[in-house]
Amino acid sequence: MSAGSHSTLRATNSWFSRSSMASATSRKRGHVESLAVTEWSSLATERSEDGRRRCAWDWSAREYLAYHDDEWGRPVTDDIRIFEKLCLEGFQAGLSWLTILRKREGFRSVFAGFDPVKVASYTKRDVERLLTDVAIIRNRAKIEATIANARATLEVQRQTGSLAELVWSFEPKRRGRAVPVRLGELPATTAESTALSKELRRRGFRFVGPTTVYATMQALGVVNDHLKGCYVRSACEQERRELRLAPAARTKA
Image (cartoon, rainbow, N blue to C red; front, side, top):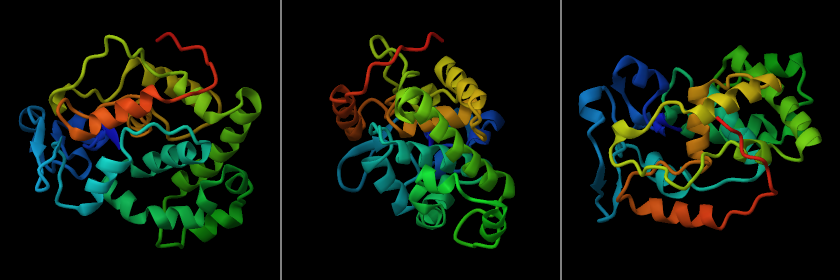
């Protein structure tokens, strides 16, 4: 999810939907449903039933708790998982992140675990087959985009070594980056997400607009948008400090 829209789940996957940020209503992906911007933007961390302070998401669905604690914001450098996240963020457009989480195993099954080598070989016959599969979101453009993104991933690997190296080269400078206190401080896009979006599209990726890309950056830990006081934030920051990637020139946004 994003942070603004994820950004906030989309901001939190941000956790509001991308459209919610734009429309002034948000749902931080399953988190805060149908709140006026003036209301959700002021939300900070809150104490959960287990006594821990977490980002103010909508905790009515247990899937969100596991996603927040164990996945969102934790650094990912595996190309398969990065490819998966990019594709699922694209499928989420116009839907709730909860829908994606509940169908994620279905997506993984029909898309061969998001192995880009296997998905890149899918044909028009596979597209027609997937359009009848209730385990996933049956949207032709998004299914075709997943296949195109698999092929683009293989080309990135051939040219630069890994998709991870490309994505992480757009990480913002860590020093001096403000720690968000309230959901309203989480952006829907940034200069870096806009630049990465442009580069991905240049390389043939689809459904990778700046908001989707920022949501992906949040989810992959390229940025740490857990709010100040959230107990997960420090764990994510420690994992980011321990992260080791092949040297890659940082993009100037």
